[in-house]
Every structure is written in structure tokens, then in C-alpha cells.
Image (cartoon, rainbow, N blue to C red):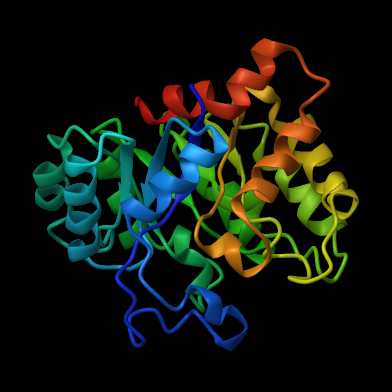
Length: 275
């Protein structure tokens, strides 16, 4: 089974989705399951994990509602405020939902580089660990130092790094990101999504050759048993199309065994998210 481990849905609202700047104007519209189902039919994708794009409980409920009506949405990564005093009660509300698999916070947007390490956030993750749900780590490279300390504190919590931690591919920066990713990968409970790369490169002039060093690094660091394919649809549309995003990965893993290819393209996501 081929699983897209990372995509989004939204009813476009200019204020809510203010992160979609003028360069990304092509995605200033609604993106819903009917749109994605057609894309999946064209690209041989069997199912997906829908990931939050807005930091509200309404967003979590919106995604769960879509998942209940569309069987190809195999799981949802929602949002809760892990800093809240009532985090235990909020998690209890969601933990019985069959398609709720985990949560995410847009840490990349936090001005505090050590946001993940603040006591109130750590308290929320400690509560999450009890429910055997996952946590998606969305950060920029300059936040990876905090990520390393963060994941070490919770060796039994399942983590996955979104978009290979968004390295500065357009600028060609590599070494600092690479060192930190190798250290983080030493923690066996941390997975990595090969997603969101073309939007960290130049939208108009990226090449597969330009992405290869970054893919080499994460595959060597995490191994094929802890890497999962994700498209980041519809965000990927600002720099290409779905077929191109999938082909980057299928070309890269083309020389691996069939078992390894199947792991990257679906089985790891199924295992990680308990789909």
C-alpha cells in the first residue's frame, strides 16, 4: 500500500492562511478531499495522513470530519495546545477517535528557539506519551539543537521530523543542518518525512541533483526503516506538481530492494501512525 504521510486540506481564508504569501498565490483557494482523490488516482496513492495547517481545535475537528467521510484519509495529525492547563482532559477527548493518530504544533513559527523545551510544553508532551499517540516536529534548522534535547527527554514517545527539518536548500546551506540531523537520528524513536523539499529550494529552478545530498544524508542517518514519503500537497504546488514530488523519491530509492522501497512508500507510515 502506498501512503502519502503528509498533506493538508483547507477552506482558504486570507487571515487564517496569511502564511500563504504572494509567491505562493497559486494555493490561495480551497483544497478538499475531492481534489486530492483525483490526484491520488492519477499517481497510484492508496491513502494519506492529513496534517493540521491551523492551530485550533476546530482544525482538528475539521480534519476528523473529513476523515470520517473519506476512507482514503487513513489518519489525522491534529493540533491541541500542549501548554494548556487542561491538556489531560483535551487529549482524553480525542484519544478515542479511531482516525486521530497524533498532533503537531507549528514550532517553526515560534520566535522562541527553545519553545520545545519550555516546562509547560514538556508537560503537554508528557501527557501525550501516555496515550500512545504520535508527535510531528515542524522546525527550521536553527531549532534543531532544541529538538535534540527534546527527543532525548522522551525516549518512548514516537516522533517524526516533518520535511527533513526544512534545510536551506535554496541557499545551499548543508553542514550545520546535517550534523544536527545525524545526532537526532541516533534516537531510535525519531522518524523522518522526506517531504517539503522543493519548496525549500528555488521554486522555479530546483533539480533532483540539488536535492540528492539532503536525501543521501537523511537516508544514511535514519535508514529505510524510519523514513516515510510525504507530498506536502497542496503546498508542493507552488514549486511543481504531485507527480514530480513522488518521482523525486521513487527515483532516489529505485536501486533499493523491493522491501525497502515498500517501507519508504507506505509501510513505515502505516507502522508509525498505526493506520
